[in-house]
Length: 629
Image (cartoon, rainbow, N blue to C red; front, side):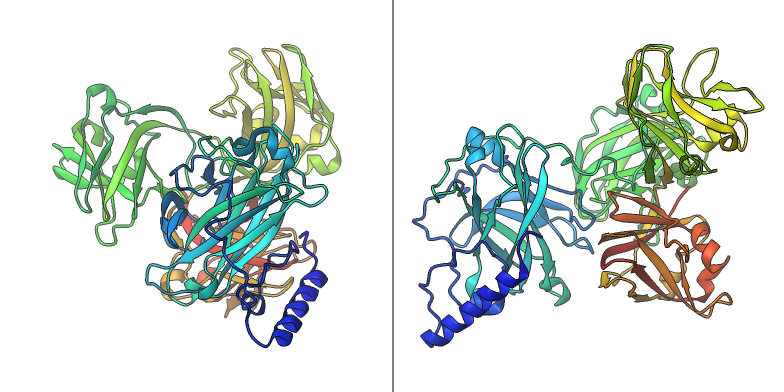
């Protein structure tokens, strides 16, 4: 963090002494010139004022434009959020509103300074902004957050803190300053990101705050205002766009959109299309139907036809109306496998299917419905990059590395090897060593040269499971493996090769209420489980922890377990987490079987309290339990 604590303390002391000398609060006093924007209650009474109406600004939102702003959803605590221009505090402002309540309480909104300012972005020394909050029930609660800057060609991240502590100072001006080494440069997609990360209203039972952003002022080093073009659109910098694939969803290949399925209806109402023969033929074992929608509750499917099980059939639990399909973290997408639909509608249901509809327990709008095939491609967690594997060669030529013992040890049953490349044809692996099956072995069909590994939709990545490689090189191949190479039928360049473990998408996901917790390094915090929560832990389930820490978070079980009353799910010698670590180190996923290796089969019957722990200070945003296939 670039702000130094001793400077904040000096400023706070100076404010207190100033107030004592004056004898009362001076609401006309100018704001401190320091770039320290973390505000304490004492500072708030010192007259930190909102921008004056007459003050010139770069962006005031009065024109209704906000295409230069975009929600950022990559952080583990990022909440589902939507943007709009709305009235607040007597003027127009950018409204940042939650679309779904839950443990993820942090909205992140990016402001594209590079597009707004053009070449003048290199002159930016600071950004001032008015930040205010409101609650649906009319209450006021203290909130705080950060203003991040992505600076320079390398998009180096720094931040300043902001807060609104008093209703009488709401909205409040916040300042983000670019210090030495944090300068913006032209044509580098430099941005600011405003977050609201602490919301006391949630703890007080007042729901989530709505954040309002207004009166943005970009200033140069002399304090001169820079003019912005509010008509521009957001240009995403590298690494900004979400975090890639939502791990709650399956990868789907060869999607075909069902024409005419843009539909909407009220809660408990249905709408959809009559299927053509061609559309019906897409529904085969192994297929996936995907629904993209907007609603306050997940959307499910309804089948109408001459089905022996019934002429009108929902694909949802009729008691709880919990959707069994895979639901995106931002509640924008639901996926059903053919097999999940068949559990409701019977095997071979497609032959009876005349009309396909959507329904939800809340008002809903569906943007698209598509059908594709389930891919074996996976999100890879706990990935280790093989050093030195940046390589390139011509068609039918090979290049790679001699493996170290540590690299070879990564290849174990259940692991995945991932190749990031550029080529007009997929890249496959070649093994060299004293293998009984041969000293030089390709992992590709030698007749067709079709890659058995999973190929990403954009043809930039190939993944092999250990088991796929073993089919070519034999079980235990890693003990003979000395050199690992790549090859393709076209000229190729490999950027990286990684080995990790697959993250498993989960359906029927239930978040464990009350698990937002934090503690210092080697300290534990968590919840006492209810019978309903304990019943979620069954073979085939996965537990996903979303957190912020400099080290992975693991689970701790407390109960009357024969193996011990207090048991960690981590290697006690190395404290390396066996679960899959992903989402840039912000999430860990444990399978039931991994937990059982530490706590014993049937551990859930003894489980009274579930906690988290880490070797570094940590904060957990949510813990959820779901089922894999």
